[in-house]
Every structure is written in C-alpha cells, then in structure tokens.
Image (cartoon, rainbow, N blue to C red):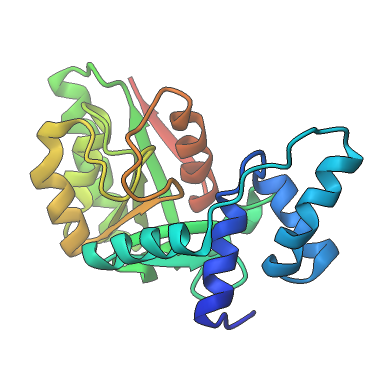
Amino acid sequence: MTVLSDPERRDWLRLARAETVGPVAFRYLIDTYGDAARAIGALPRLAERAGRAVPPRVPSPAEAQRELDAGAALGAKLLCACEAAFAPQLAAIDPPPPVLWTLGDAGLLHARSVAVVGARIASAAGQRFARTLARDLGQGGYGVVSGLARGIDAAAHEGALETGTVAVLGGGIDDVYPPEHGELYRRIAAQGCVVSESPVGHRAQARDFPRRNRLISGLTLGGVVVE
C-alpha cells in the first residue's frame, strides 16, 4: 500500500474528479502512468488521440484543495484506494472507487458486515424486523451497512447503532437525505461511520443511487432485503 504526500493526495483527488474519468479509466491511468500527476498530464494527449476536440476538464489544484478543506472542516477524512486504511472489501467490486470520504469510525469499513436494506414505504412490522435483525447481527459480531433511506434502511441503522453501522450516501458526505434523518445521521457519525464517494457538497440525484448501492454491495458479505 502507498503512503501519499499532500500534493499526491490532491492530484489523486483531481484525477478522480476529472471529467469522463470513472473507476475503470482511473485504474487504467494509474496502472499505465504510475501516479496521478503523470496521468493528468497525459489526458490532453489521450483525448486528442481519441478524437476529442477539447480535453476532459480536470479540477485545478486549488479546486481539489477546497474540497479537501471542506471535508476537513466537517471532520471527515478522504481515503484513497491505494492506502491501507481503504476498505479492503471494496476490492471485490472491480474496480473499486478511487476515493471515499468517511465521517466517524473508518475502522468499521474493515469489519465483516451485512447489508440490511429495503422498502422506503415499509410496514411497522417490516421496520421492527429490520431493527431486530440488525441488532442481532451486531450482537453476533457483524457490522450493518445500509443507505440511510426512509423505512427499512433507517430501522436497520437504529438497530445497529450500539454495535456498529455504516451509512453509505449517494450525495456528498454532508448531504443528509432525507432531511428528517439529520439526528440519525449525527448519531451514526458519532457512533458508526458515514461514507460517500461523491464530492463534498454534492446533492444526491437519481443517478447517484446505483453507485451508492454498488458501494453497499462491496462493503458487505451479503445482503438482506426487507419488504
């Protein structure tokens, strides 16, 4: 595993946020050029070779630093995929996200975990089942991962608060959605861990939730879907 300097971390974030550079392209660029700075330098040439009139936009060092500063102001930490603190289970999703923002106990990302997810409009019995199941999983030594959504997700987090729960967000690490889960979000940040691969300040859109679900699947050994 690599230990990144501050400039290297900033370049890693810049490449991760570059236009058209998703996890597949990111890994190709790092594997090909060795580090993020060289990969960024190669992007204009690669774009020209691919027939693009304009190279993909890459955030400036100042823009990347603003995101790093905004995350630090929240008490959040950026983990890069090459670092030892990065969640090892995410190697199971090929390729893993280049960066993750974490708020809370990032050590929970290394736990043996189960996803408990399900309907947003859930029955009282379904929510009670999810809450009890999450509590029992926690007492059995497993972490519980869910998506902070209404209904089953919220019940699962509540059941596992005492033993360790991870909330994976579609928006940025500071995007509490739905808004009425603000107190639950704060409790998870204090007692568990909140995770996002989106930029700080990003407000979740529909296209972000498949990516969130991909992270949930990668962080867990398996999943239980309630209702």
